[in-house]
Image (cartoon, one colour):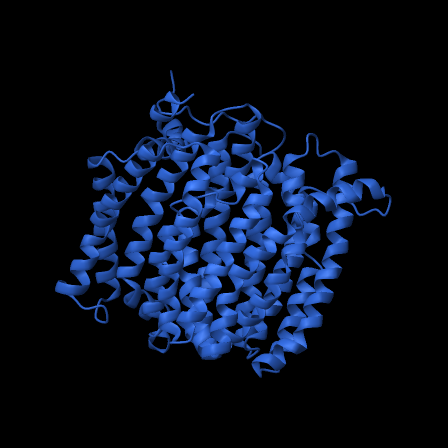
Length: 511
């Protein structure tokens, strides 16, 4: 088994056709990518239009603080149901019925908790408008159960064609509602109403594609079993939620709502690009590794391929975003958001640390190391909050720069433990890092030249920007080939899979 880590690992096994839409891992990845890209496009266009024409940084900051406060509590929305259904041997109708009842019950609990904290949060920040925004967010949580369980069942059989429909229709409803209400002057509340519209449409679409009828006929012992599974990871997700959501809360409290809006926009843009280039296939990783684990395969080589895929795509994209942060902000959001440019640069570079060790939560859960993961996650959260608070005490730019310190600490915290847990080869991973760094440097060279010699960041126009990113894309392709990046074969394989239908149509038919 040890030698396998140093030889090219086999491709992930195809999944059997378990119904409409199910298929191979590559097909699932493509549908997951289509879902992610469609959502990204709608969310991205919506955020640009709203930020440029309708909402100011302080209004975005209001919604960001309200959403962050609610999302810390939202860990009980799913309560492990997605993973429970993903790991259940059969996911029979009785199990589905119990999961649906639990999801509905926890949605009412979550909505009540959000309402309970709404007024104290408004008083703490001295912003009365936070109360109605939090109330609207609470209402949206009441609708989420009707899409959570169906989506989990669809993901279980890699039916990402159906999840594409669910996610895309929901995102379309969100964008349409947000734009319409923002244009009518509903300010930050327009974004909260959009959450309700999205949850409602997702619920309807999910129930059409995979109905999960509600019934009070359930057994307490089954309910306790499911809740027990979720409660085992509740503290973990609470800790993770605090680490992920407190930045907006801390910056909003220490630097004000306008600073929170700028910080939130920089973080969101970096996160959107991250998920655009890599997050689309993230949904297939857990079920794929679960199947490999069930088949007693060595996970190390497969993990190295995931590291390579993230490194060859995300690292260059984040570095390029950092170099072009000012022209990106000015072109998308206008001069009123110019102060977000350095924040975006720091946050984008920090993302490189977090993708260097992907699946840091999924695989420990899969391998039954939940308790150990909780300890690591608590330390992770403490590091995130401490570094951010120290930075925010200085200013919003220092708060963004603190993400680099946090990212380095995060990598050091998880690296050795994940190596022992998964069994990947450090020699192979370090080679991947070196190749990814080489590809990244080659990718950003045209952009660095563009903003330092040819133009300045403030004078790089749209056509100049297009030419610069095109040159960087060409440099990326050349570097992947010349440096023989370990992900090169996988990239070629995915490209051929995408082009296969077109090649089939162009192939001459026999006479």
